[in-house]
Structures are given as C-alpha cells and as structure tokens.
Image 1 (tube, rainbow, N blue to C red):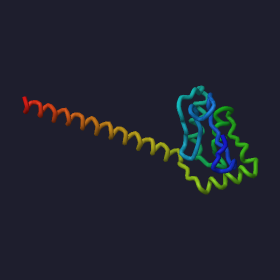
Image 2: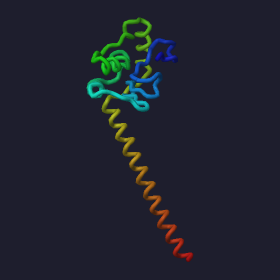
Image 3: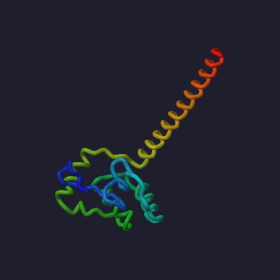
Image 4: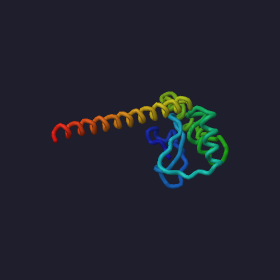
Length: 142
C-alpha cells in the first residue's frame, strides 16, 4: 500500500489474507500493528517474535517491508531501499517520525493494562457503593 501523504515516496507493507488492512499484521514506529483477525503458522509466529525482540523500528534498516519479508520468507529485505526516491522518502520519514523500542512498546502495553484494570476496579467499587446506597434508601423508605 502506498503512503499517499508522501507522494509515493514510501510504501507500507503488511501481511493479510484479504485485501486491505482490516485483518492484517504489520510493523511500524509503534511496534506491531495488529488489526482484526489473522491466521499465522507457528513458524511465522516465531519469526514475528524474533524480529520484534531483536530490532527497533527504523524506516531505513528495519521497516515494514523488512518485517513482512522476514515473517513470510525468513529474509530481512526491503526493495524500497534500492530506489532513490524511496530511499529519499525513508530519509524524510526517519527525521519526522518518532519510533518506540520494544521495551517502550511493552511498557506502554503494561500501562494500558494497568489503566484498564484500575477502571474496572473503580466501576466495581461505584456499583457496590450505589447498591449499598440503594439498599439503605429502600430500608429507610419502607
């Protein structure tokens, strides 16, 4: 898929059994990009794990095409770097686009999970307090 914002200076690669990104897995500056439901083999799962644990996203050295080729074929290759305009596009993106390391991605996921769990606890506590209040109110008015 071409990145339209960059006038075809870069393409975005992902793995999908269907057309489009709705059920796909890819690699970007924030780490794994998982959308919808995907089917992968045990070998592909292992390659995803190896790739994401070994490298930090870098549009020139470890981009989405490197990821897709490694997961599918075991080859860490990107043809985009062979074209001068794609190389120029990756240079522009690399200067503008922040990227996270795998540790930053894991820390963010942990923070998201903790925030979710905290929200669940707060909702449960509110529901209990509401029920206690309602029971007390009913007892006073009966």
